[in-house]
Length: 189
Image (cartoon, rainbow, N blue to C red; front, side):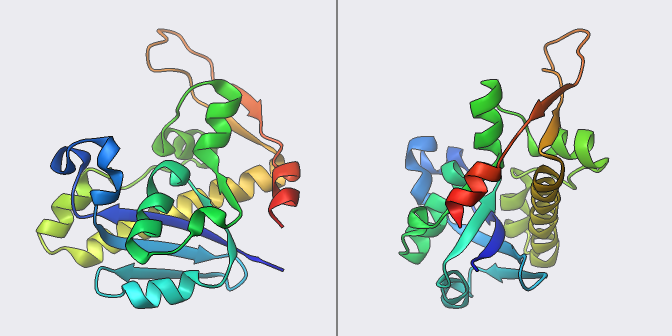
């Protein structure tokens, strides 16, 4: 049975540094963290451990992330020269966008579904990197992986997530949407 690997990366630079989103693969990885469901273990790699990261990802697995199809996986794929897009994948952000037609942030989902919040934002990652705060950067990335893994488990267990109202709604009600990923998961295995 394939392992399920929840992933997140942080970069040394921002879209502003590389000329916009169309230059995604010019972003450089500072830290990448993973959670192996089968091993029940976290793995974090920094920019000096690309060979170890590549070895870790060489075992085909179901890749689970948040905005991973548009950000993490293309950057990992480019950096490591691996065809990770051929791996079975589940992007929680994509699943929500398909069902609601809008993007919802990881922090909002964590707050409404898990009663927790992120410890920072992705834009802080390049600052932490430049300041040499690698332990803090790894912990931030690991926490994003933990939140994503917990959301994934909630979807598997309950089949739904609470989607917060749009911030533009003056009086908004939380929306509960069903996210039946059983068919998707069956296709991934």
